[in-house]
Amino acid sequence: MVYLDSYYFAGKTALVRVDFNVPLKEENGSFKITDDTRLKAALPTLKKILKDGGNIVLMSHLGRPKNEGENEKEGKGENKFSLKHIVEYLKEHLNTEVKFVDDIASDKALEKSRNLKKGEILLLENVRFYKAETKTENPAHEEFAQKLARHGDVYVNDAFGTAHRKHASTATVAEFFERKNIVCGYVMQQELDNAHKVLENPERPFVAIMGGAKISDKIMVIEKLLDKVDALIIGGGMAYTFFKAQGGKIGSSLVEEDKLELAIELLKKAEEKNVKIYLPKDSIAANKFDNNATTKLVNNTEIPDGFMGLDIGKEAQEEFSTVLKSAKTIMWNGPMGVFEMSNFAEGTKKIAEAVIEATQKGAYSLIGGGDSAAAINQMNAGDKVSYVSTGGGALLEYLEGKELPGVTALEG
Image (tube, rainbow, N blue to C red; front, side, top):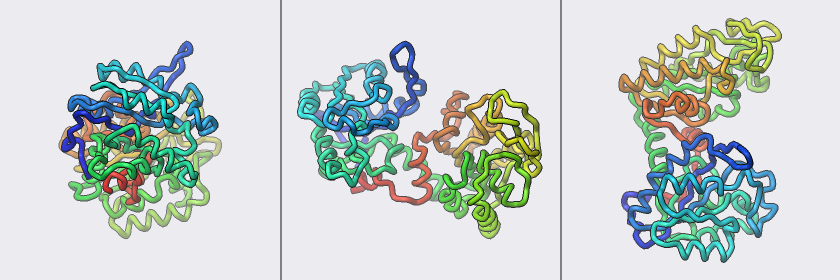
């Protein structure tokens, strides 16, 4: 794999796949960035290219446009998914001219990229406005990738968050560059390096925390982790499937009825592999899915009818925190409760505090994107853990041992 620091970009135009899939909020007819984590992560790669004396053509997706591909020739789509809302941010943080083009596969767009002056940037419109970006079976897919490739002398992939997708801009485009001109960006490199730290030779005890709504979303990574970890903490909505599987009363809590046998199997596998599984002993339960609902602290095997568990309780918070504070390696993916509601965010915050404390004592901590990353970032504690991944689904698939097309394209 060719890494950024070993490549000199002077006099070249770098076509860079970034992950600018950031949340936007509409205010008075304009759209504001509400979380710039992914944008900030990409800046070092872009600054390195500019410092070398190169030009940059940026491509990314943003959201999931409903009218994807309807205006395939024009490349135009819904305003709220347009990357033009990112232009001013880039100008401010890179202190250079940033141009924008919406018809990204056209000769007009190509002319703009070829006429870039030293140190200038061209931002291409949302690649997902083109059906051929995501539809690999579409005959136009390879042609679209080839048109994208015309924009640069060298291809840099710095979008680990989309590396699990075999899309035109994340994988197929690399087929139209010489091997020596396919480069791994800093974000991609950091994500892979940090994933390797927990997968290859973790310092022990190694504790993984899995949260979120469903076992089905995390089953593969849980099974993989049972071969790696010393202890596994399970929280969030998925925990109630385990309790019902063991004969507990869970009220109207979230449950996957078709995964009850699987939950028992996972507990048995953990026991066979000598992995300690920690399930929350208590919950903050509510009489409805609402931040202002009536709540009570309940035992997780005795949740009354009409109540649902929406956060881990005090006893669970204390037990989980104690386990984490003695860990030497921590991997966290998924919240402990309905984190977006303030009255059910305490469990996730307590876990975050325990992870931070363990890190300060010398543990290595990998925060696996999503609400786990949101919790750390809301506490302004990104620099108090070892690494906050922007990868989300890509990281989970990598931890599962799946091949990531975006990574394979870099390896050649």
